[in-house]
Length: 76
Image 1 (cartoon, rainbow, N blue to C red):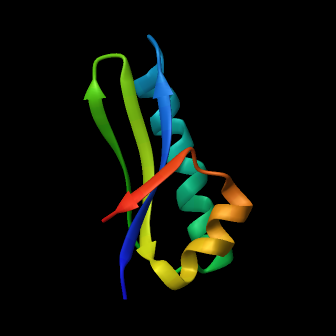
Image 2 (spheres, rainbow, N blue to C red):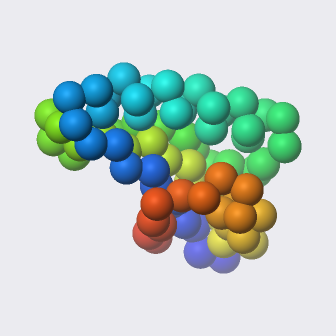
């Protein structure tokens, strides 16, 4: 089974704080909906672009994608 990474992009001077705040909501969603996630986190692309992400197996992706509307996805 493929593993996917659903990504939310945040850009600008507050990108770091916004991505960190979004991660709180991702973690809450994972817990409340009992999503079998592999990982959640934040990554710095550069000083004005950060991402929040959730990694999961492909079978769980459609429900999470439809509920949370990520900006993009990629293979984990």
